[in-house]
Length: 311
Length: 225
Image (cartoon, rainbow over all chains, first blue to last red; front, side, top):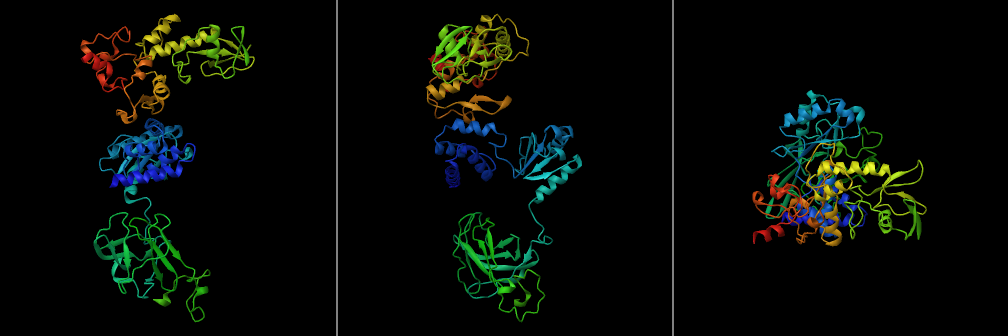
């Protein structure tokens, strides 16, 4: 089943770029970004769909260093060995990484965590030696920093600290049908009350709790939800299904609407793993608030979209 | 029609003709390796180089890919061309000395030794087999893979290609390995098919890894019966 999904995904990518001259490279790029490498079956699909010979596609795939025919690990580490980085001891950094990971350049660690490769220039020569990890640049890298970089990578370079990041704030949500609060103060995620929902998928029916911090994607659920599953969501109080009119812009799954205290709507994608969400604040800034005349709270200049008054 | 001068001789040829074709028409010999009638010109081996232009503004071009121009002056065997050509022959000899085709060309140009590190390549990347497979056999079973020093010719993923009909066209045109594989037991092989002075295939440990895309090899099958 996985195989057939892979090939239909690939077909979709192929048709997207088929009209372009030299679209093959764009296709391969997109396939690689999906699978982290170019699987043989995907190359065959590209060949049949574009009406080219497999050897032509294979020729392109092997010509560019960017493409990999072997599965890569979760994290891709590229060490620059271009002229500028080379004279600044880029090779020693590469050697140190090889030693610490226990692999040679071009290989992947047995636990599929790291792939190491050397590249010829990353375009930041003045700040060499450069190490590129999952799109994050580390400049002026010294041998002693290598272990730190690896540690940071394992922690997740994209991860944000939900307790400190100013972009993360708590929201209070209620059911758009029965207006009951969805917050569950007895169950904490990220040290905040959670948003409790009832979900069902397949034969399973149980609870799911979302972090109430806007910007945090931490969830817990009674049953493990497999990746890419679309779940049906219900209010735990009125048992009405939370289903919106709109579909996810990224994956086309239905969006789950939840109302914000003080007005406004948050919609999150019902597909597990999809991080798409919309916050609609059209009615929720102070200007539109029914209580604005009586409200005594201190308001920031640009207005607030959420206030304590409705807790 | 385009008029040009080749070695001082004026000739008129149709537009789109290459210098090589025009020179052949006049009877001037130009050695070629990666060129074959019926296949697209590729200009990989550079053996067919000629000097074009006049006076101090001359340049060396490969005649198999250069279309004729009005009033062009071409010299097919000037001293500059001969010097360059001999160097190319030496380089070819350095990479694949076992090739009968290259040996013949070397002896024709009186090149008796070469000054580079001796290698014994299975392939000089002339691309004849790739073009044969694509243009004459309409199969596209083999092609170029990789880049730079890792460039090689073969099937995708080194697996037997579904497109390959075992026609043997690639082996027929190969200037390096032509009819190399005439026997399945290397130690018993009296390899004369390629006319090589010694047997390149038995010196390799992996007989299978030689540039034979035919699996099973028709030649070997015949020898077995």
